[in-house]
View 1 (cartoon, one colour):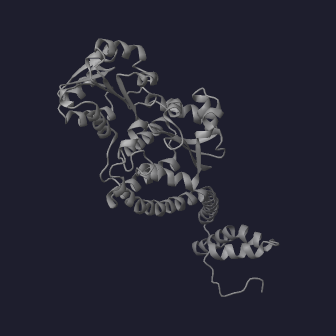
View 2: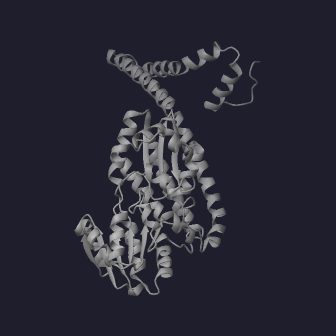
Amino acid sequence: MALYTLGINHHTAPLSVREQVAFHAERVRQALTDLTRRKPVHEAAILSTCNRTEVYFATEVPEVASQWLAEYHRLARQEIEPYLYTYPERAAVRHAFRVASGLDSMVLGEPQILGQMKEAARLAEEAGTLGTTLHKLFQHSFAVAKEVRSTTAIGANIVSMAAAAVRLAGRIFERIADQKILFIGAGEMVDLCGRHFAAQQPKQVVIANRTIERGLALAGRFGGTAIRLEEVGERLSQFDIVVSCTASPLPIIGLGMVERAIRQRRHRPIFMVDLAVPRDIEPEVGEMDDVFLYTVDNLAQLVESGLESRQAAVVDAEAIIAERVEGFLRWLSTRATVPIIRSLRDAAERARRHEIEHALKLLARGDDPAQVLDQFSHRLTNKFLHAPTQTLAQAGSERDELQSAVARLFHLPRDFHFGE
């Protein structure tokens, strides 16, 4: 059983493709169960974010993962195959370490991905698909990420997606303090954006969410109010800035809804940021003259600030990762010997129990304990050595190889010559 990573990300596919294979958090456990039940996959975990969908899995048949991914999302395999990558063992381990450390992110060094990987591991554990190998992989990934962030400058001078959104809004509006802002959703990304925009002291902040209680809790941090998600359509015209990031599988804001809002606003512009994958706002909205719509891919162009200082740290980070990959692979290779070691110990234990029972019978019969103990040790030694000595005696062309292996296994002296 080998370790693999199957994925699609912002390097290999545009947003229009990535959103087709995204997994919503509430469906990940069911998807993992489906994968391990229908395919010859022994362990699995799914990492699904705005920028990537990746399946970490252990199997003897790696091609089943891409087939399953297409089937699960009701896509023809050839539709997504050109955008997919599959990494075998060593490359899979290195990739996991780089992702956790922020080296593979759209924003180099961004810290959110580490939390997302921890969530992926948690969901896999809850689904019962996080076996020993993947558990060890994720734990090593988290340790490597911590080491990279604490010993290099990879996280320095980061311009986040949230900060980039504020910068863009500043290009559209002279003063953000004069604008009314609507946030749709109440997750981590909206929370982050809310903090950045709130620092500009906008005129009004409103959170729209399916669960009003969660919306109120988040709005309270920014001195705002909350509305239900279904109220967005009738209230949209009131807002100058709209930031959306939900887990909805379908768009929340359609072209017709925005056209009505623009008419009610008498064509005053709306600045919209769609951070969701799949998208919350229909792409056609961006073609309207009075709407400035940006997605996660659009914002990537603004996150290059400070890249030079972080780029120098990549060399140091890659060196750390390379060393830790070797350590993990050494652990992984020992896993392959576990079955034979267990079998060897089981055979030795059976021999030991058998000889103990035989010795106890002799003692119960009244035999001399010293003789019983001597016989016990001889019989046990003979049983342990019978199979290897018989194999050596009957060996043919592989005799030299076997003799070298025995010498190494039993730490025999090397001051003799095989074959003499």
